[in-house]
Image (cartoon, rainbow, N blue to C red; front, side, top):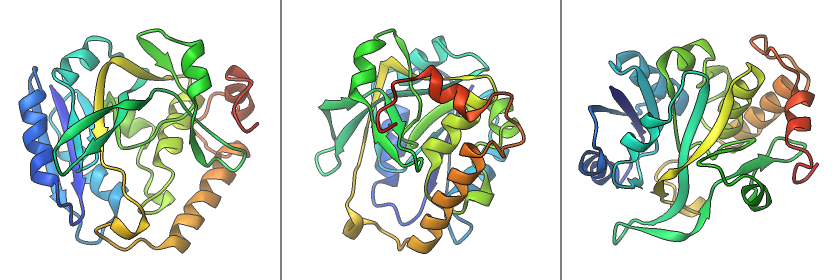
Length: 241
């Protein structure tokens, strides 16, 4: 079973997202959601994960539309040591339509571990499962054992920020693999700073960035079996490096 975790905070499109998941899924799934009353995005995701019954967990933002059979396509190529995400597209939430282009397959980060898109690498690796240095963070799937073993939503990072970098590096550094599945895609609602349905503590976001950079670049993450430099060298030449 696939358990889909949908943490929410004043999300206008939560019900539509859940409806969409159920309409598009073609396997045995469960959807778990809850409103964040102050515990934070990572903590709420962990709470939902502990309640989940599925062998596989997918975290999904509460403003997304999925491709038909996304779950079937991703589960067909799933393995315990791989963190997987569908292709990322934009969502026209008002009309509830996925905008097919541009689409995002590969991601990276700069020397401060700030996330970026990486079109050049997509052209180098066109396999169905395309390796990617980082992820965007709005949708990812992994085995439940790995979710807890690697503490993918580390609450010490703070409530919000750097999640795509965090989860990708935890998989790579522990000897796993991070990929985009080209057989599945989803639309994600992108908002500017004025459109967020909640206030974000930008000082906390900056602290999260600093913590993430220090933890991984300085090889302080205790569950790592590889060095940060090993991962960078694997993907050289990395954009911004």
